[in-house]
Image 1 (cartoon, rainbow, N blue to C red):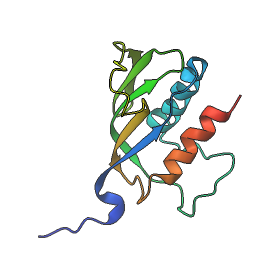
Image 2: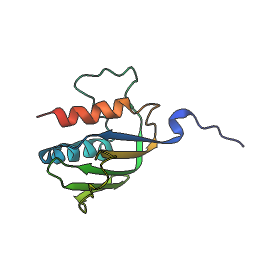
Image 3: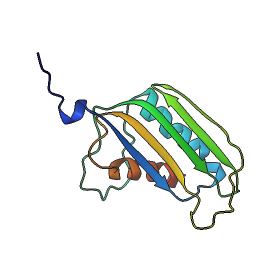
Image 4: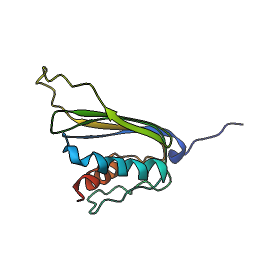
Amino acid sequence: MISILTYNQAISTTAIVRPPIPADKVDCVDAWLRSVLWDTTFPAPAKSVSSEPHPVDFEIHRLKGILILNDGSSRIIQAVRDVFEIRDAEPISTEDKSKPLQCKIVLIGRGLGSSVEPWQESFESCLAAK
């Protein structure tokens, strides 16, 4: 028997990339990760401009990321299913000025959608919240 995977069943990858964040926003990132990983709930952005629907039935199998903070420090994020950690990282070399330092979170899972836009908006909305 041959089974055909629908789009929602296929494993895919998406990456959220953004400039460095303030150090006091790490707790917001933690809350966003808890929603996505523990509750399997997509944190809807306060205001959406994306034409893409936000993911409803998704599974995050793996998540890796680096948070670059405005104070020059950085954090590493690692997750497998609903277990994750945010920990201090080694200082990042700023010798190569051709590459700007950026935060990056890579999600690997099912049902992530066809575009990063909803994920990016959700993450940005989390950081903009007070």
